[in-house]
Length: 486
Ligand code: NDP
Image (tube, rainbow, N blue to C red; front, side, top):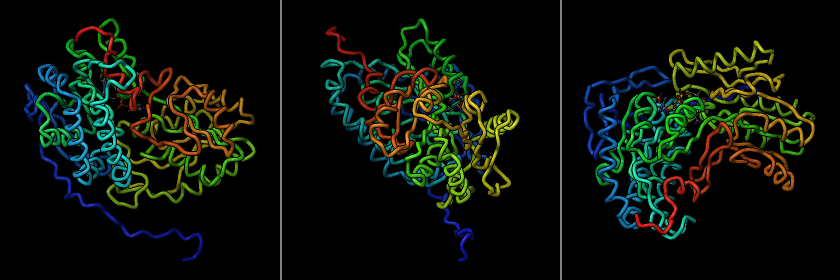
């Protein structure tokens, strides 16, 4: 092959047949699939083909009430069950997720549009890891730093987004159950299918009825879960706008609240960083999952002396990414999750051009059907530009430069968000210096977008409050032991 000729790949499609999809789904309440009371439904489509995958129930007020009552009815026995017994259920859930990992990965790819390589190698292993990790905590809550016998909060109402559907479910359900709470969970409207498959896994695991309830629907169903008076704890991941509305709705009630909201993370590249590795980190930071990642490194801050070199290498690398059928194991960039999200990404990119930034997109053909956006880089970006301040939630990177470490810190922190940041340098002392100054919940050093269930995750400022994962994440589902009788 002549140098410069693109490498040809034969397609390597994963089989759809491993993930059977029912034509319709009910709601998972009290351990059973039930019909919604008023019979309302909505369609879920494959973002890569626009094909209707299934018709899913839309839970109304009476359904959400039924789900909360089921969770309340199950709550006493679940809370009083010895931790080692609850742990066994969590281990069972973890093992069943592993056994059905291939099917769940295909299902997630079909419903979300993300590449099978990511669902298979990132989402599913992390989902299982979250259940395994929290299974281990169930009988050790007295060692979580909340006194010898911390108590569960009761019923948790949980609302999750579409970017990591099953993984966000695991982040919410595993700690809640380990701590002895029962849950009512609302998946995103565009990605309900893996949550419904998880309902089946709860049945397979013989989980006591009502411990997990899943109500599908749109934003209104989420609002009904959040506002239900018999919910003790609300856990939300999604946009800052909806997060603020939820904070207002919960204010003045006895409900506990954790919010995991948006971000506009800085990925800071110093002139002593190994350029090739940093470029891989930039790609992983913002083009992983089509940029549908709250902690994505969407603001590249690169030291001026190496900026040209880094941007040139980055563009070369982006030219090798393969965009297309998400079920093909060669695919790097899948589909945008919905027509609405695609429109937002397009609109924000047009704003970037109108404000005077220079737009560059990888030269890759886009499939005719489905929702697609090519990897895109904006240079000549000023801090005042909207593309440098607002979350785009797509495969779009804004490049800014700096000269000194102080300037890098000032620019990185110049955002209403504070979820994550990255630092690339060969000096350990500089990493520590930066980590102390960056106002971000997670700071990655010489890597980006690495997750582990033992590591707490969460934000500052408009990125939300509370932590998920690790010992800190458990605290969000427990009353500290204050010596009072339960
Ligand atoms: P939303 O915040 O609207 O959605 C997140 C979840 O909340 C979904 O399950 C949604 O339901 C539900 N929801 C919507 N309105 C309410 C409400 N009033 N009360 C309770 N729950 C509600 O995010 P979008 O999907 O609309 O995405 C918009 C933007 O949010 C994106 O462009 C991105 O910037 C950001 N985002 C950030 C995420 C993060 O992880 N931080 C994740 C997703 C989005 P439904 O899906 O049915 O509307």
